[in-house]
Image (tube, rainbow over all chains, first blue to last red; front, side, top):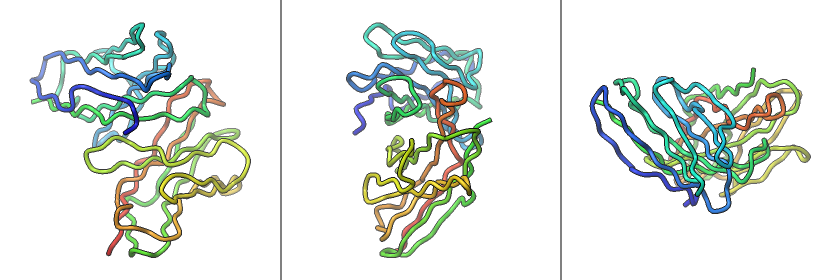
Length: 114
Length: 116
């Protein structure tokens, strides 16, 4: 158990809908990262927050957004969902925001868009 | 641009034999390199990382990795494979030195199967 929690574990929804994925980092970690894992794209970085502020952005679609709250938990919002958004979404956390940090991953949320 | 390559989609090894999972990287300057393992229906678990110093890095569950700057490689190794080592292994690189960003770039993964 990494100490990173994600809810829900599974999410099934329809095209055009909006969903919210939640992540609680390990105690004491200030950085939260979101990654998407799909069969065709592999593991891709979406976005990072550090202590409430956006720190880095990857291949995140405009339909997707995220935020980190004062208690350091983070939410990833996915809207106008398409079939291609079906994937496993991982949250990771690390103590700081430097390259030597180890990122610890949560169990993921499996999103299925029908 | 930073990237890692895992040239083998699948590696099969007999239980008790040594195993190697290959990774090569492309990054300017000194890299920060990581290995993660993913078991079915689980998240990624950290195994080890190379930051600087000794080229042989020891990690969890008896795994180690050898950093080779001249060959730009960071191969994962274990002297004696267990059936429970069967999983998907990912190599990753951090672009922090080059960009100041701490996101990880992952390879495509190598599925390791240890045959009893």
